[in-house]
Image 1 (tube, rainbow, N blue to C red):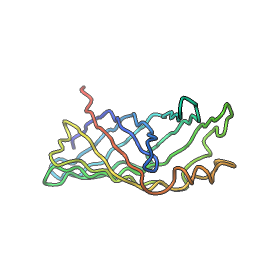
Image 2 (cartoon, rainbow, N blue to C red; image 1 turned 45 degrees about the vertical axis):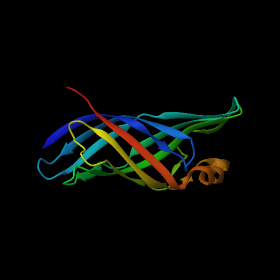
Image 3 (cartoon, one colour; image 1 turned 180 degrees about the horizontal axis):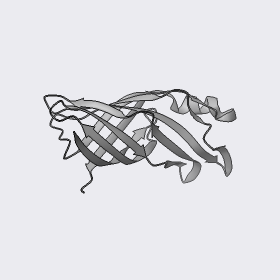
Image 4 (cartoon, one colour; image 1 turned 90 degrees about the vertical axis):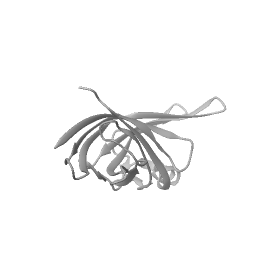
Length: 170
């Protein structure tokens, strides 16, 4: 079994909007030599997003994306990597107009999101590279009075993920 550790860098888009949630963390991948199959444990750091329009600060939010299960996938004969990440999202904090709208970990997705990722042909596990995919973000619950607004703005289809896997040298 081959084990490779990566630094994860990338972003998630929010409903075809210019708002991006930065992804930073690590992925420890375990591949079965010769089979093209792999699985891995992904850990992502919390991300803070801000929205400013014409110099006016609208809101700040802290988002935690966590893997609900190992990332699984395969490399096909053309060297394309196909992976699926099963994740949960928590909006741990949200502030607007000087007010705290959300705090704690109760504002979270109702179910896991399945994020299919794919590389271009020629992906090499030892060199890393870019993966991208589109996914459906499940509705949120536990966000208090603003739960319907959050679901209107960020739940649903039209979301994208772009991830660069950068091998860590040991």
